[in-house]
Length: 253
Image (tube, rainbow, N blue to C red; front, top):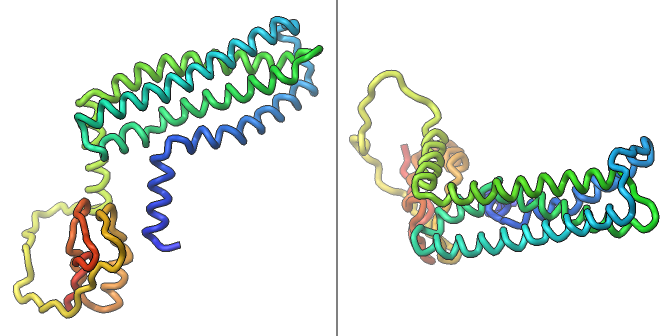
């Protein structure tokens, strides 16, 4: 897989809100098998719930987790619509969609919802006390997580929080581009004294797009092989049309 395709897949996985809730589905299966195995092995009688009480608790957990899922996604849609009129789409993508707290919280709701449904379906004449305890514990954790999510989302959308997060990402980019720090002051020349003429200019052959990232190590490798200098013409965020100067101009050193 080429580098640009890997970057697109990685970026999509980081910004897709449905990834972690989808992962919660197989995790629920694993948790169910583990809980049934431990319940059959130890025969724990902690809660001592009857069938009626267990069914009532299961239905309550199913109702509240479903309500949490609907309310969370509905609130996110409204927040995105409101924020889109005040902030740029890039800030929305990096703050709301890529926030792991929001995604993990929704994944917890999905896992609890599916686990409670399966527990209610398997409870007819016998109550597995360990499974009932796990359902009650997951329901309590979901309530706490939902209350925390409301406070977290309100703080996340504040301008000072958005600016701080953008600044943090900016510092990470600077550190990745300039990993080594110099202890001595050095003069930086804007251009060489005797610049070589451009020997080759590679034009963009694909469809029109916006430059999102650059594979710098690959360009450095190609420059070493050619024993020259590669200058990437556009900057990150620039629009490059078909036939535009997108891939670098090369100078022999």
